[in-house]
Image (cartoon, rainbow, N blue to C red):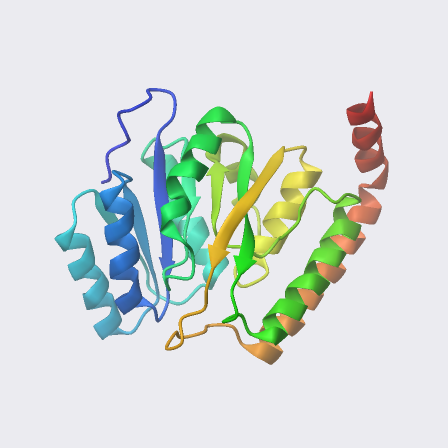
Length: 255
């Protein structure tokens, strides 16, 4: 079991790294996090036996790394939720979510940890800064999603709802995330919308994101786009139901 950080008795952070078909790339991500003295919860989300063995070896090779295994592939959201549950059970107060494929600039981790310590009650999210490697279809899809998220929250407080680089304050976000049934690509989107509805304050900071040339994508263009569209439909209806509460909260903030 990972040991909480000893730097601050009231702030105990771990990293959650969900892994599906990125077991080779995950080693470098884990190594970078361990070098920063951050305990890691590595989540094997139903990988093939050979992939599972690689992750077992990664967990053995580094101190303060726990491997959580989902027997079947639950999806990114399911993997993150498994990691969050393990983090809560281990006594961590905050969880840093990092993709296993190496997209995120790990050198930004200290800044995000500092922001989380400064604002321990707030959700800290990454606002992606892409280089030329970003697929144009994915970039357009994000713009569409961010438009609908603004509609669903009746605000512009979420500049990007799909970035998987984020810090969860577990006391407030775990009760919301544990109830979600959307365990695949729509999870990152739905969590932020529901955090907004729950009144959880969110702060976003730039994070460099690149897509490795030889990277393996788990995004299924047709199925996941349909699923995300269904997520937005459900969230729009949810916004209508909560409209009086959302408007009242917006008016209260202005006073």
